[in-house]
Image (cartoon, rainbow, N blue to C red):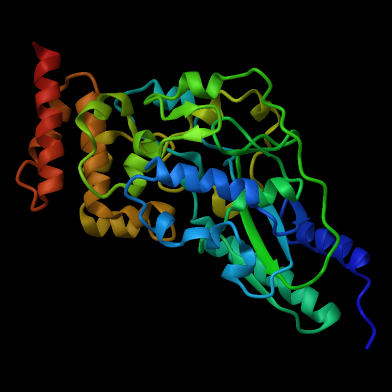
Length: 354
């Protein structure tokens, strides 16, 4: 049996990945010892908050062969997502009557799209060399995707803990193929944050507690997406009008002057969510929420947390009769969580009038 020319196969995989719409493909080994230490220290500090699954998975996240037996290499890919026609982010953030949605969630959910492309990539490899061992992941398993992507040369992990590419900024998704193919590996990316700390300084809740250390419990993305309980009182005023995620640390990153807009039609803005009025979004019934977020990452938080998040934003907005009327329309909502945040928002509106 003739073995494949793995060097040529690696080149083919990168070419096929580009043809499938990935902006970059890289290959790494599975050694993540230093990153495992960082992960365990982060968990020990409690910085994962209510994301218990981070701890349950243990070191499977940092040991690819423990997650998928036989894994020798990881093929990492990235795909730009910033929608080309979205309203200017700062313009929306500076308009407190509008709701800010993180740019990654303005279009269709990326999980399915990227997983399908990764499957097509695996199919091309199989058609070329025959059956081989692999599994595709897009935020669907305990994977240290940023560390693997760094080791594959796709970028470095910035002080805000997101991956940064010197030629493309940070507005991109990551995905992986774990494989048993002994492919040649790429050189890891070197770090280029230098002395810059704009991301640390801009964070509304000071969630970046030190360079390369994020306390998720203070992060607006965690508070509005991962947390299913009450948002801590002291953090609510700091959230402003960010109702799903937060992009501030990326918006100020100097490397994003090199970021490219997405060419994927699926990532285009849907339902005007790049700057819709808070009162209009707050009026969505659960049926409307489910209909308008079909195929969107936003749907995963559910209508209850959607209303919770918007109530906080309404409380942070300048006082207006329209906002007060909107809040009062939900004051008897069946959810204790929604009622609590509506009451807080009404109190904030009352204070603004005093």
